[in-house]
Each structure stands twice: as structure tokens, then as C-alpha cells.
Image 1 (cartoon, rainbow, N blue to C red):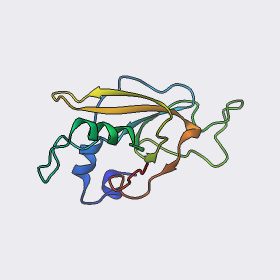
Image 2: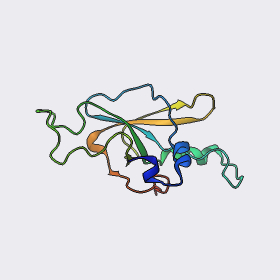
Image 3: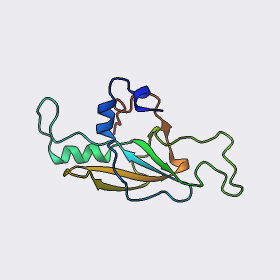
Image 4: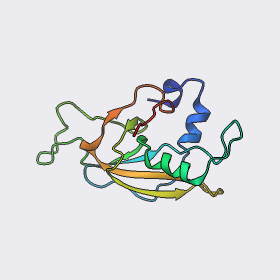
Length: 142
């Protein structure tokens, strides 16, 4: 799934939500490396300044991610290394719903800015769903 086919007309918004940044890690075994959707900037398009607490809450509730890399054992039977009968649940470039409380998360600075993106490594069987529409329109509710 490409940015253009997923969110035609919003490609620049998707690139802003998922900027290209080196995560500084690779997934091992049956794990998947994803980049979580970036939270809103400090100021909305309408000029409202968001307090840090609001941004941190949104960051903690973020469950939308883009697949960056897939480990060598992901979506395979662990004993035979055969692919799962239903096939791979996700491919690099797909957008996913991921668990709010699962995985291992870390932040990486966007070069040349004081802003960060968050990455997460999760087990292949923890993927909740593949997003088939616009990943910018998916919202999580507490």
C-alpha cells in the first residue's frame, strides 16, 4: 500500500505524520518494527497552542503505526519456518492498529528539529488490524 493510493491528495500530511527517520534498531525473531503516527505539532493549524500534557496524552493513546521492517521469523511457524497458512498479516509500508499497552517503545529526534517520532517493536501475533483507509483519520478512544 503506497501513500498515494491510501490517502490520495494527503500525501504531504502522511509524510508529516510518518517522517523518514532512522529508528536505530532492527527487529529480531518474530517481531515487527513500526513507526507510530506523530502527534500534532505544538500549534494547531488554527493557531491554538497545545500544552505538553495534551500532546503526551495523545502520544500515549496512539495506536496507528506504519510498518518499517519485519523480523526474519515473523509470520512463520516457529518449528518449521513455513509461512503461516493465512500468509503474512502485514508488509513493509502497511499501516496498522497496534496495542496501546504492548511492545517496546522509544523516541528518536527528527534531525534538525527538536521534535521526535516514536518507534515500537511488537510480536507478529500482536498486530490488531491492517488499516485499509486513511491512517490520518483513525482515532483511538479511551
